[in-house]
Image (spheres, rainbow, N blue to C red):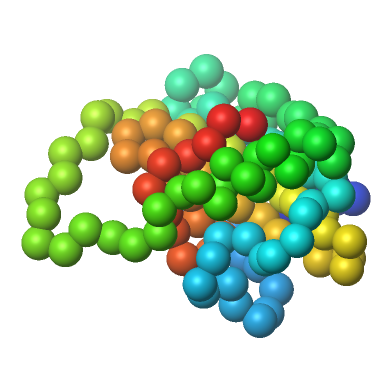
Length: 132
């Protein structure tokens, strides 16, 4: 999935499993350096409510976008090797966030918010999903 503030939220996330972002790949951090100027969060139901439909749309001003980006920056990148992980049942709900940067770049994040919560930019992932 790819969203921007200009395009808005997709009415459904059915069939999507993540986001795409422009090159060059962000493969060493979830977000580029710098402070976003604004953001858009699109929350989707998953299997509950109206399956895969847009549940809520939130626009973030500069302060909210920066606070969210700071929370994303605290997530630990990496994965567990040779460990068994048990996750609670997930209903498939997801949140997609688009952050606009001063250079005109928009970066999307996909956050699985149930089960084993994780955040991905389409190149790398981190455990956990910050609140929007």
